[in-house]
Length: 33
Image (cartoon, rainbow, N blue to C red; front, side):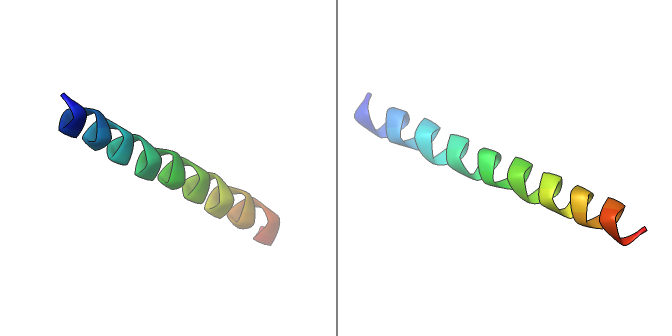
């Protein structure tokens, strides 16, 4: 039970990170144009 919970947390953090990274790249791309 404890292991699966930590696994879910580990999966959730990178997801948030990727969303932020994509948003950052997107805004940079718009600013460059």
